[in-house]
Each structure stands twice: as structure tokens, then as C-alpha cells.
Image (cartoon, rainbow over all chains, first blue to last red; front, side, top):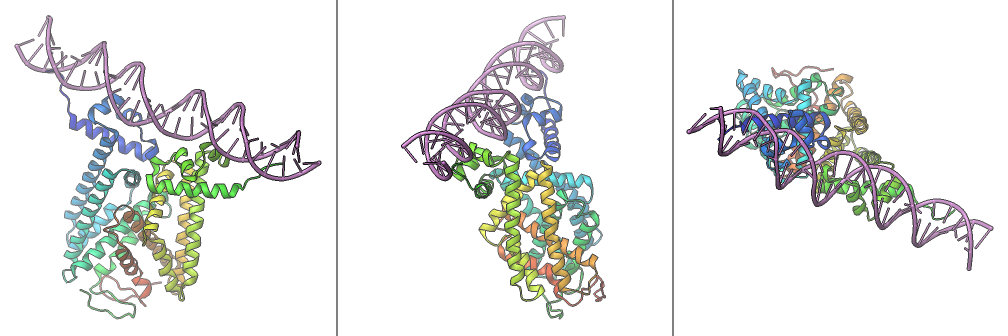
Amino acid sequence: MARRRDLKDQQRRLSAATWSVLAEHGLPGLTLRAVAERAGCTTGMVLHAFADKRALLVHARELLHRRTGQRADAAQSAGATPLDALRSVLLQAASETEEKREEARVWIAFLAAALADPALADLHRRYNRSFVERVRGLVAACRPEWSPARCAATATTLVALVEGLNTLAAVDAETYTDDAQRAAIDAALAPVRAPAAMNAAGVAPILR
Amino acid sequence: MARRRDLKDQQRRLSAATWSVLAEHGLPGLTLRAVAERAGCTTGMVLHAFADKRALLVHARELLHRRTGQRADAAQSAGATPLDALRSVLLQAASETEEKREEARVWIAFLAAALADPALADLHRRYNRSFVERVRGLVAACRPEWSPARCAATATTLVALVEGLNTLAAVDAETYTDDAQRAAIDAALAPVRAPAAMNAAGVAPILR
DNA sequence: CCCTTCCCGTAACAAGTGTTACCGTAACGG
DNA sequence: CCGTTACGGTAACACTTGTTACGGGAAGGG
């Protein structure tokens, strides 16, 4: 026995290198050699830590979800009221900072890769649904009188808005500034905030 | 002089083939040979119609925008009232049908390519801004009393929602059904529909 | 009918890809 | 202090990529 390695740590480091390459050179620039160089090793070492390029992508995708999930956990538990928690979770998931915008670029690259790789597509679906589920729970906590269907619909809407903001801010940060994103999220939260929504006639109905 | 060709038509056909390949095999599967095969010709012919692979991508992106723009024009002019027009434009831009979801996949692939190609990124920004501008005009027509800033903010929000719906529906059509998308858009249109929005305290302020 | 003129398919090219096998080497156990 | 063993770097592999050069052949004009 000699010279044991920390496989988990290597995989973590290589996943981080994958994010970095994706953020800088996009999906077409993601080669094993680029990842290796970014991680400060060789392609041989990469394929000793992962069986495949796909395995590397899958692991990097999983780790990205875990990271964003932990951040969402923190934001959620930091909110005093359910509404605060919901707002924090949504804002934190959007692209306020340049770092977040970089993460959005990585997310888009993974999404594009998922369109060609069923395994990645499965991950994307699972992770996005867990995010929707988180938001749905928070919406339900904010408005206990709402029907489950209405909570679910609101959650999918909010998630779509946030991911849309991320997607567009990744390429056009000028149009989708952090202020614009905050305003969009607050506007979308209005029905959750208000004691009752208004219909087209201006009458406030009781929605369940 | 002999044997003249219809260059424009060739380019159109090749752009269509590019969309088809992108929708089916994603960005990694977009090779000149795949495009040529889909178009029923050879790579030589492709590179006689376009100087470059990038030129092909740019042209295909431009044509995609023109097509969606024309569809938006039709939806817009079909609406009897400004609100109808706005709603039609947004719904038509979302992914109601499988054909639209395919288009969304193509859009995502172009977006991912834009993250590695400044020319495509420029196109993306320009096209997205023109869409925001279209929506902004319609919002202003719906609510003439709103300030330009409020119209603009509402427009960016609506566009982000629609593109988010497209993005998520492209991979998870089960969660983001056409009904869910319609509900999301209608919910987001509520403030435009209602004569006045409500603030957090439930009081209806006059917003300019 | 021939001849010119322009297409476009063929096929080669060099570069870069993921992947594999191999071997030097560094570190641990005795 | 040395031998063993796993680790990881080297380098080659087969393949695909975008791109280029060239030649056959079809269509039009005279």
C-alpha cells in the first residue's frame, strides 16, 4: 500500500474547474484538456478520477445543485417571516452579482448539454422540481388559505421568472440589472403579499 | 455564364437544417456534416454558401429572429384591444405546442453558443431588447397613465417570465404544460389588467 | 453543337477531441 | 532503509472536427 489519494477532493476540485471553464469559454470550450489545465493537472488524472467526460459533467452538475441548494437553505432560514424567507430565496437565486451571473452562464451551459444528454436532462428536471417544491412550500406558508393548486401555480411562475431573469442577465446584464431583477421579483410577489388578488374587473375575489 | 444558383434560398434551407439539427442533437451535435446531411447536400456546398461555420450560425440565428418577429407581428395585429394584443404576443412567444418547445431548444442552443461567441451574443442582446421594446409599447398602450419607467420594468419582467417558461418547458414539459404557462402569463398580466395595483398594506396607490 | 463558365461533390488536410495503455515515481509498510 | 504498490503523468491511439483544394460535369450563350 502506498500513496493514497483523496478521491472526493479531486472530484470536487475538477468540478470547480469545470464550472470555471464553462463560465469562461462556454460549452464548446469545455474539453478535458481545458479542465485539466484549469485544475493544474493532466487529462490522465482527470480520467482517473472520472470514468468519462460525461461522468465529470454529471458530478459537476450535482455539486452545483448542492451548492445552490445550501445557499437557498441559508436564505430560507434567515428570513424572519415566510414572506421574507420566500423573497430571500428568490433574490438569492437570481443574478444580483457578477459571481451569480457567472453561475448563470454555467447553468445555461449545463442546460444546453442536457438537451443532448438524457442523464443531464434528468438531473435538470429533478433539481428544478426540487426548487419549485421549495418555493411552493414557502408560498403555502405565506398564504395558508390558498388551494394547493394555486400555490403550485404561483411557485412555477415564480421559478420561471427567476430562471428567466438569470438566463437573460447572463447575456445582457445591462438590461437586466440587479435593480431590475429585484423589481421584477417584488412585482411578482405582489399577489402573495396582498391580502387578496384582484380580477380583471377590479373586484377582489376570494381565491382558493 | 452558366448554371446560376439561388444563394439566398440555399442559405435559408441550410439555416432550417441548422435549426433541425440543433433541436434534435443539441449544440454538441451541430457539425457541418450533420447540417449538410439534414439539408441533403455535402459539407462542400455548405461552405460555398457560407464562409464559415460561424457565418452559418449567425445567419440561422438572424433568420430565427425574423421568423419569430413575424409571428409576433401577426399576434400583435390580431389583438382587438392592446391588452389582447399583449396577451397574444406573450402566449405566442411561450411554448404552447411541441413545435414551440422544439424552437425553445434551438433558442437555448443559440444562447449557449452566444456565451462563447461575441457575435452571437450581440445578436441575442439586440433581438431580446427588440422583444422587450415591443412588449413595453404594448404595456404602455394598455396603461397610458403609467410612467415610462414602470412600463419598462413591467416589460422586462414579462419577457423574463416568458423566456423562463420557454427555458424550463424545453426540458420539463411535464411540469410546464401549456396550461401552466398560460396561467403564469395571465397571473403576470393581472397588474396590467387591473385598474390599479395594490401595495403590501392592501391599499391601492396611484402609481405613475 | 461546342465551349465557356460557374457550381458543387470528392477527398484530402491539419488540428483537436475523448480515451487508453504504459511506465516512471513518490510514498507508505515492514 | 528498502521494496512494494497505487497513483498520475506521457504519449500514443483512433476518430471527428472545420477547412481547403481540386476536378468533373451541368447549364447557358454563341
